[in-house]
Length: 313
Image (cartoon, rainbow, N blue to C red; front, side, top):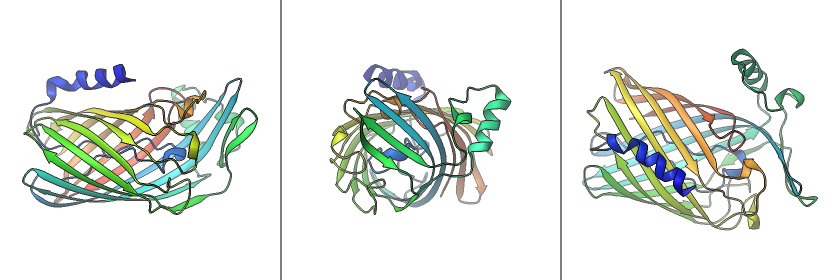
């Protein structure tokens, strides 16, 4: 995993020079990981002062895996709405993120089956599963560790973050996640801590890169309780390409290390996702709009697909 993270940052290093573009505010949308701190980069404007943002993620997940000792089924659709507020003054930045999360059977199963058929992509067992069903199950040595079959919705944990700009390209961030969630699927009922280093590219360049590398320290609790690891390594790396002043192309890779101890199933192991999208810097005056989707680059290790929208200004 460390070699993977180093490679991601090395690929974009030629573009990392000066300031601004924060990258896509993404994280692994695995429904079993919603209650743990995998930080999304806070939204900030190009000028000092307040920023506000809203990010919507609609994620359809179908993952099955089995080993001699373990079996996993994640068949769910998750809608997550992140309400974000940021402030930048001199070298210091502050961020607040409050998620609203809804996990249920969903309505996209048939659409995704047709999508895979049209492009000749593997279904991964989807066609044998009930349409728009909700089931999350993890069994170890014949004992049920996770068994969720009813919809769960509510407020997730509140993330507070503070950043310091040590130069035109480098930032250092600290984040706390406070237990405000109302269900074990949405909160681990503890205070999580994350630190990360971030390097940004020149906002005026035609091609701008960025990347970050960090560590989350997690409290024992939530749906995975004593089975989870207490630390998580995470990284992002991406490129923004300006076609013209009105539209930009986006590509970003998100990765993190395993969160569950002794897991023998891919869905609870390391994750590697690709984000592909378009950015409209001034579609609405004073606001930027990002439209993108996430794909599981490492098959079986993250949700199949997530449709995402982020607006900030």
